Image (tube, rainbow, N blue to C red; front, side):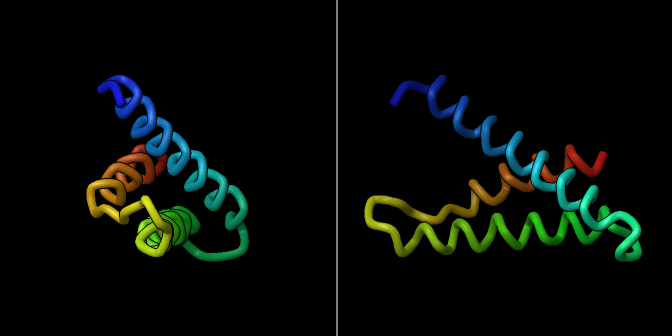
Length: 79
């Protein structure tokens, strides 16, 4: 796979987790105290569970680096 394909996939994950975090924040406003903290936590939990799930899928691996990239998207959404 070419470097730019890998970069595009990683940027896609970053963007997807930013959107997921914003979606959680929007859904939780008025329901919980500090909805942004909850949104970030739920998104991070999902990122971790998704990578863990990939360890059971043939041909896929769960990587801490991928969780870190997803976390960057979460952090950008929180800013």
